[in-house]
Each structure stands twice: as structure tokens, then as C-alpha cells.
Length: 155
Image (cartoon, rainbow, N blue to C red; front, side, top):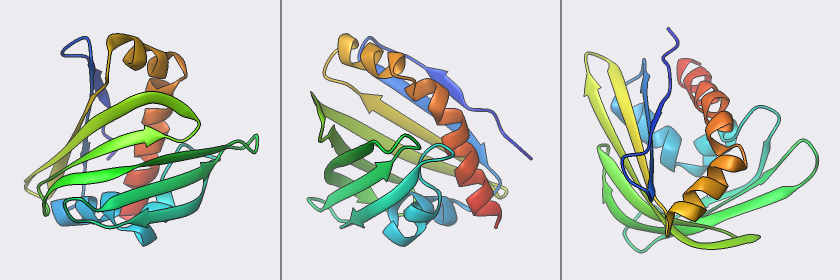
């Protein structure tokens, strides 16, 4: 079953994605945090993961480099602030070629009867940064991005 992505903006600096997956919480957590799994599904269709590193511990760093179909490479990186396996993790995020400041991302997972609800809350440095990200298509790309995660979890 395909579940819909719900996108909300509870404050001027926040963007929240909520989506359910027909998979155990531990599997969703692993798919979101283990480099060898992330590399198999991350990004919208047509994007390729060319590097993926993750030191999953408080203070540990992470980095993902993706290539868009047009050849443009995007590097995202940050550090983990909190890990509560398999319920929650908090990390920072920055982009190498787009310096808009640090984004704080809180990912929470809730499981009930084999259905895991994912809530990803991003707190941006300002409303302008959040809106710039939305204008670049981040909300449009999120639907197929999570669709790829759903397909991966089902395989």
C-alpha cells in the first residue's frame, strides 16, 4: 500500500514531513542511517548516490554526495547530535555549494502493528532559507524520494 506524504509548516522556520511505511521501525531506521542501505534508495528518481558516509553516534559526522540526471553533484553533510535507536535521531545538515547556514533535522519513528510513521522536522535558520529550499523543488522531490524508500523497504 502506498501512503501519502504530508508536508506541514508549523512555524516560519520549520518544515515537517510525515509519512507511513509498511515496515518495522528498525528497518526504516536502518534504511535512513546505514550508508550501504542509504546508497541504494536515496534521492529522487534519476539521482545517483556517488558517496555515502555515516558515523552514527553523537558527534559523528555524515556526508552524502548525489548526482542529478543533468550531472550536477550535490553534497550534504553534518553531524549527529542525538541517537535513540530505533526511535529517533537528530542531526545537523549543510550543503557544500549552498551556504544558507545549518539546518537541524529531527527524525522520529513510531511503529504500530507493522506500520511505521516517519516524522522528519527540519528547523531552518530563517523563513527565507526554508522558502528558498521549497522554491528549489524540495517539496516536489520529497514525494518520489519517499516512494523510493518505500520500494526499497518492500524489497
